[in-house]
Image (cartoon, rainbow, N blue to C red; front, side, top):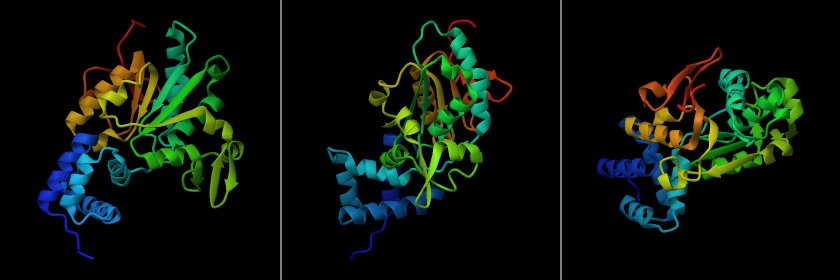
Length: 280
């Protein structure tokens, strides 16, 4: 079999294409990572070389190969109760403020993006059930989205390794999971309570369907974007939120350095970012 080589020119063409499609720009220090996965996809599709593969990738009507490529190029690593302090902020501060200012009885809507394999969305559901008294009075909708279709399928299955659940208290592991093979299966009630969707945050057409959220969790995604992609993501979140809605970012991320659309809110448990609206 002919050995496939990714040239510097090939790498630059692919990097620009992937950035336009996804908003993630691979730097030169990721060259080995990108080349390895590109070569794998070229071989699996039967293309002769990068040129043939790239032509097919750009003009394939179904977009199936682009989705496969996105799946192998994006990094997904998380676990239950990651950065738990924000869940505490959600149940102790954010939701009480949201419900105080709600003008109707419509559900509280929470959006997790990226979903990865579902640990964050399920963690939020568990935290609400265990710690927020408002669950007896309010309907809550949790939507969890990712660009990686394989991750969405894994999230919907709800089967997790011991590593994924290692920080869950034993009582909650027993309450919401059952042993299954070499891991744990989350209970059916939780699986059916969350809507998982595959979506590209940089696709303005797809994003039109994501509106009227009260809280958005977007943690440890923007660190992979450049300044322009971060600003576009901030604008997407702004449009997706209700007035006075909140965005929770990762520990090392700051909306203040990205966009002036949001105001900083400092709660006892965490710093979050709020879309301006009706005076509180």
